[in-house]
Each structure stands twice: as C-alpha cells, then as structure tokens.
Length: 519
Image (cartoon, rainbow, N blue to C red):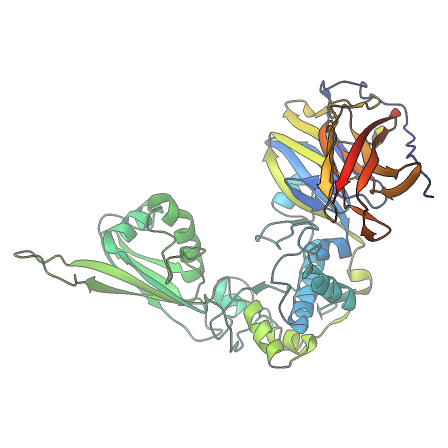
C-alpha cells in the first residue's frame, strides 16, 4: 500500500503582511530566488536561475541571473534539428561572444540597467528553457554539454565571434561593413557556398515616389529625388556606398547605415510597402536584409495599356544577398559545411580565419546576468514551486508559492503578493461525481483559496492506487488529472475515492469526491 505524505514548508518571519494583496515597498531591487529544481515564469516563458526586478528612471528592469550552461541552453539562434556539428559550432560561437562581451565590460543598456548581455537579436537571442525542453532541444543540450568551456581565443582574449543568418555565398570583412573601425584579422571575407536559405538572394522593386518619401523622412533627401545607385568595392577595400542624388546634392551613405535607415523609416513611412512581399505572398523579415545589395532605376510598364493612356512610372529595383550583417560565421553556411561532413572545429576555423576551439579557463565566468526587459510598468513572476523573495538584500518571504506582481513607482519597486498569500488553503466546489470510460483519464476540479502545492490521491477501497505529483497552483479553480491507470494497467470499472490535497506553509486541506470508471 502506498503511503500518503504531505509537504511541510518552513517559512521565516514575513515582512509582507499575510493574507494581503496590498502593495508593499517601495524597494530598490527585489529578487525571486527559486528553490531546488524550481523554474520561474515571466511573460509566458520559463527560466532557470533567479530573477531580479530593479527600479530605473524609465520603469522596471527584469534580469535573469543564471549559470553559464543555463544561459547557453536558452540560446535560440538556429533550429535544433540542424546537423550536430553546426549546432556545436553555434554553441562555441555563442559562448565566445558572451565571454567577449563580459570581458569588454557593460556598455550601453547593459551599463544603464546592470546586465552583462541582452536577450534579443541585438546581442544573442535568449528565450529561457522552453525550447530546450522540447524533444528537439535534447540535441541542443548535447551540443552545449559536449563543447563545455570551449571558446575561440585570439591574442589571449576571447574572440569577437560575430555571426549572422545568411550571406548568399560570401561573408564580408569587418571593416567593410563598419567603416572607420580597425580591421580584425579573423573577421575577413571568406566564401560561404551551399546556403539553403530563403534569404540567400532577395529582391523587390519600389516606386520612386515611395522611396523618396522614406529617404526624405530619414533626412537623406532634400527636394526631389533624382537617382540612387551603389558603388561597390573589393573585399577589404572599404564599405560599399549608396549614392543618393536629389535637388540638395549627393549624399554618400555606407550600405550598412543605409540598411539601418531603411529598416527604421521604411515601415514607418510606408507600412503597406515595407517590408516588401516575396514570392509566395509572405513578407521579408526586414526592409533591407543585409549590407550586400545593389539598386538600379528602371521604368514600370503596365501589361496592358488603357485606351488613350500610357501609365509609366520610375521604380527602384533592390537586389541583394544574405540576411544580417554578413560578418563572421554564416549560420546557414555552417549548416552547409556540416551537411558536407565538416566538424565544428573546421567550420569555426573557416569562418574565423584559423581560430579553433580551446578551453576557456579563467576567460569564462561561472554566471551571467541577462537583461530580459526594461522600461516596464508592471511585471509578474511565477514559479512551479516554492521561492524566496529578497528585497534590498533582506529575505522577506521564504518557501512561498504563487505569482508575485511588481509595479513601478517614483520611489522604486512596489510588490504585490499572490491572492491568499499568508493563509492556509481550503478546498471546495469540487466536481460532483466525475466519470470516465475505462482506459481514459479522469479530470476533477476544485477551488483552492490560497497558493499551495496540490495533488490528487486516488483510493480504491482503503488502498491508495495512484498519486499525482505535487504541483504549485495559484489560488482559484484548479484541475487535476488521473491518467486512469492502476499499476500501469487500465483501472477496472467501479467507484474510486478521489482526494484533493492542498498544502502550503500555513496549513493543509483536503476534499473528497467519488469518481466512477465505467465499462
């Protein structure tokens, strides 16, 4: 016979008033520290490590404090179904980029808001534990663990391992994409054949008047637009330049700057045009996908001339290659090399001019602070188990369950505990006489009045035949599922006694209902 156990949680003296949904604070900083094996939830995503909410002049800042491996497990830069060697190359590039970023020191938003690296494509895309928890995510975890502590090193420091999606056949030299910056020996143009990417080649046309409106809004055109062309250079000889001729003269703009300009102003000025539509009816992900493109002016002629009227108008044709800044490793190029049999060290050596993975040693920190978001007015953080709440360095609640709400105020962070916080749970409004056919799951629901660990215990006569795992639940209606089995077999038809058990630090409550398995 199985033994029914209960969970006992020990709680320290609480500064937050019990049984209160009133805000407390303000605090300068509040940290949610998960218990062993507990993951946190923010913005419908799950995260390892502790989450910190700080006050800034423009609102709340959300930070994730994680170990190096947990950070890498959350990277979402390429499909996990890709060849293993390309995944390993991506892991090493991402780990090296992080080491380079941390060694450089916090800058920009990181310096302002107190984090090492951001979670968006402006740094590296980090999405927590959701993707790695999928079936395909096991391959990404293998890539992370099998390359543990490996990075690329140049002149005794972590390399600046830039990477982007697609090049369309050739990467670009660092100094050509970012004019005025010193050339980096391992970030020079190399071939990148075989990229099976929808953005290896791209193109579209836009009316002259629309382009004129966009460039005028961006300050690149004065008066009427005359023409736009692109001057190209050889690898290593400087940036390609966009020459914009208007009534006000000729404006010379590096193609990467022109790309940024169009990506910012295009959708603002002409949202029905930019990003342009590609074959199949879908839009491109950006207005200008890369710094490798040409522009030519032509005339649009209608397929059929209306009687007595010829409608002709000038258009500019954009034709480009790749998606991203095009410097360093091409992700689709790495996949192509892996498909052809190259290992991850060979892939990295190709794109980073001979650099190969080595043990990072002291160049790699144990933990990293990730900037998830900032400028928010309200933040909610939940968990699948007990957490500690630490405000301005003091533990104000220990081993508590539920979702906590954080609000911005002029004085700092205001904290609202979960509904029913500080109260023992009660269980009521239980589903009346639930039934299910044999071989099917049975669902029972009830209202729990306080955050608690909840489970379902199934009796047949005096014997416990099934117990579901404990799950942390908010106050409110909860549903619990018995899979309809006994000892691994379908439960025999008949009545079963179902006990809903709720436990938190303040107490325990149970409720019983009779369920029936039918033939």
